[in-house]
Image 1 (cartoon, helix red, strand yellow):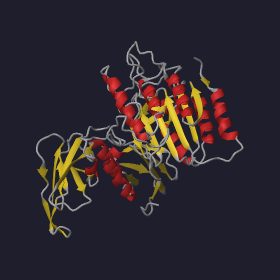
Image 2 (tube, rainbow, N blue to C red):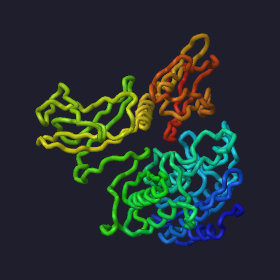
Image 3 (cartoon, rainbow, N blue to C red):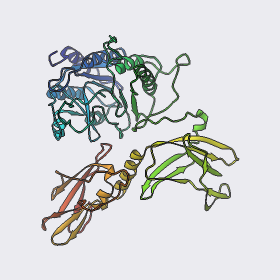
Image 4 (cartoon, rainbow, N blue to C red):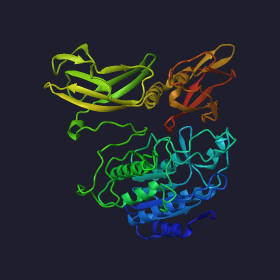
Length: 502
């Protein structure tokens, strides 16, 4: 199949969106679906174009004005996104669907055009420059002030750059979690982190669509299901189908919607359809948690995680007064009491239960079950709390970096002018990239950080670079951090004369 844009579909979509004489209406529905099969330098795909067409037909049934784009090279992809930008107006519901090769590099997701080069080890920048950054699509829809942005990626396939006898580009064939979505954005991935998505269940599977898209498109048309219910049903059904061929594929979704969004009619009585227990996935790999009765979730505790040299401190917060707290790792042993601290709670006139527990530095991911005794003496819970050491470490270190931004750099005069970045090295596990600019407000060079060691994340060992030597005439250094979740800090400027941060 030659590379082409479905011009007729695009023209119809643009005509409906841009040429109509009537003024723009709030919550107009606009969609762009992209399917890439015909890759020139990496393995071709069989069903991505079919998936895009199926999704286009489905969205038209839901009242969307749809643009369909097929086999897009880099320039065509950019031009198509520009047309989509022009179609979206403030207050609209925007839907973006992509089927094709996707690739993750250092936690960022790239959608691969059909002319992406066949890169090898050390050529990650070739892939970045030749591809579409998924986060930019979110940013563009935010700039257009779309009220609701829905992004669906059926792109969690094997590493397209793997070649026998060569070293592959460093990255993953699947896509990374989009951990910091802005409000009003809902995204769905056809498979979870480090999982691959099935095109078919067997050689006898003649369905023209991938396992995910055939399921997701059907669920979108179910009346009375909101987006979360659609994603949950899709996850359940796809996982079951993958299990039949002994494959692990669990679609994930990331929800930053304020209100429920219904694309096929409003809520109705759904007792006739089996429903999954309500569960919102975060931007982390899902953890199996025990289900608890809905009424017990009202006073569920929340937890904050902090990493220190000796391990983990986890502090629970409760809305109600408590007379005692106990906990355990899910399914492991008896509940253990946390004890008490030497403070009286004026509400109960009793000692305050210790709200904190400690875990060793090598604690594995899992679920912490927490119970508490309420003011009437009744035991509430257990309540499940997810513990993911890597995600918790990144959040904790990022919080510290945000709160201590004036300490990112410091200057010292010693045989010349030195700029120290020890603080950044100490919290490097939360950082993907540091860019600095010397005597410029625009950070234009990369400052290399040592790798993160989860076993001792704040350790500074011999030989680690902690400073740079600058020309004595240097007046300022600007800094910009890209965090592991893909978000970017404000640019901070540090002046050598007074060591102050603007």
